[in-house]
Image (cartoon, rainbow, N blue to C red; front, side, top):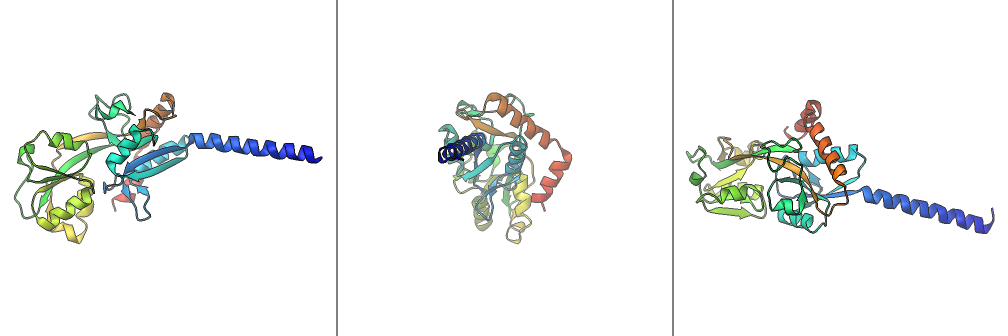
Length: 262
């Protein structure tokens, strides 16, 4: 082979490799997730990576359709702002809010269904109080022990704001709120049954906290896509359908639940 032909062959190979890598890069999806301690749904593991059941479901769904997925844990408001600015392709996961829908795409029934068919999961919020108090939640937000501690940016905050209670929004998340409640013995924390039950297995909390597990609210949480995401509507819908299939697969969900709720 002449030097010229060898050069042409090398150039063709490098061009093909470049175009192949470019195509692969275009199929990559970058999602952000909340770095608050929202166990077992989303949190940051010991290696500093995004983890949790919602992350696993989205990753499994996307990879089964041929996508390579990256997750970036961030402060919740930073995550939403990144989706608004199209710095990420979407968010894992968010409940529906009209103002969020201005810059993120949700499944078609997200705004109307109590339990969206395309949800990643249905999440409830409960009240956790000091074990020394006789308080039980009976459905009236105006009775919540003050201060009512909740992670900043969570959609439940707007519901709590409808009450006459003093709300404290923590940027550092639910675990810090729980620590304050256990130390101070006053006020209340809004969290999920899963977070509460997980923490109650730890000695430093199980004698200091309690909850009657009566839900304040129940919300569908979705994988959302930034309006500027390169994925087409059909591609987004395909991922939502695969999420729905996995969520309704008893064998898959049983194994996933066992992984986190040991």
